[in-house]
Amino acid sequence: NDDIVARIEANPKYHELVRKRSSYSTIMSILMIIAYYGYILLIAFNKEWLGTPLAPGVVTTIGIPLGVGVIVFTIAITNVYVRKANTEFDDMSAEVIREANKK
Image (cartoon, rainbow, N blue to C red; front, side, top):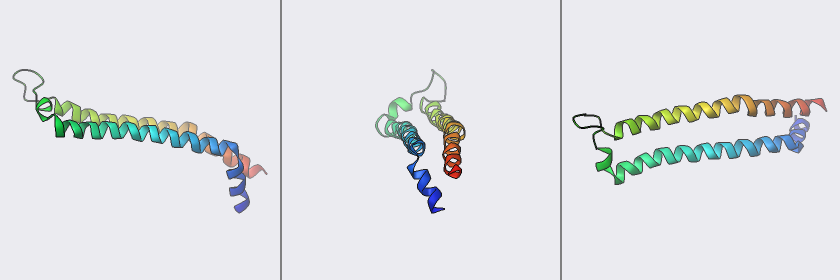
């Protein structure tokens, strides 16, 4: 097992996988932080705007669709990450493991 681990760690494709996965997850995390904290900052500093009705006589305010948008964004970005992980990252992992087991 230690020999296989050493071969995996020596494989440049493994380092490429780690680099791609790390940078992709960092970008996705930053997007999530912007969405969540942006909404929270709006609540903290611009309550009046969020409380504005969508149209005259409508009870729903601007804050409601924005809050739903944050939830939908979360679902969408999770879906994007899972698809990428299940295709590109899993394929790269399988190739690294195959190469490590050949030797």
